[in-house]
Amino acid sequence: MGLTYGYDVYLRPRNVAGALAAVAGLAPPSRDVPPLDVTLPGGERIVLPFTSGFGSEPVDCSARDTLDLDTSLMFPVDDVVRAYGESYGLPPEEGGRVRIGYVYLTVRFRSFLDPGYAALEFWAPTSGISRLFERSASIRKTFTDLAAAVGGVCCQFDRGDGSPGEVCWVSGEAGFPPAPSSPTGSG
Image (cartoon, rainbow, N blue to C red; front, side, top):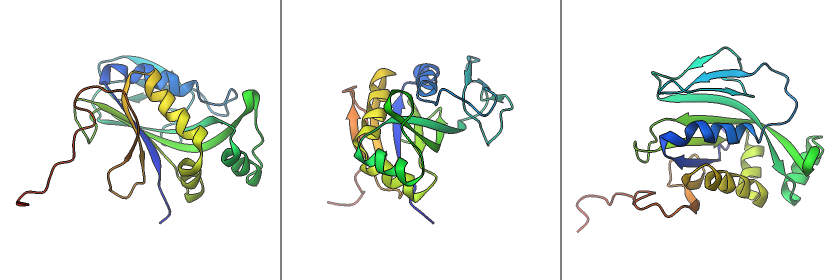
């Protein structure tokens, strides 16, 4: 199995719709698939330029804990993104950004870290994109800027190996991220 690195953005559940709209703003301007109609918990509806399970059928999350999306996102060019793009025949497009995708996005309406928060978990489907996520300053900045813009409380880089993620940005909201629990009996 390859690497599955990613970025996790934690936010209050009330900010999920706005965050998904902001993620849609990172999508390429041209689309090859029909828009996806999503009903969020609480009944709010949003239309996204992505697929879910590689399909465009409406998704109702009113009774679900997660939403899985297949995205393609545009990232600003830095040396790492440029090299990746050149190696895969992906030239910079409008605004000097390169299309990377698929990037999988799992929206957890109750995060694993703290059920009072939601999480947007962006993860790489290949080792090549995982290494790109790890090495590119512009990709890291895209995710930390996204977290700040959508009322996020924390953005972390996740190596997908079960270890604690590397905190890249934190809003300063008291108590988040929660401190790791200490092992019992260590006295």
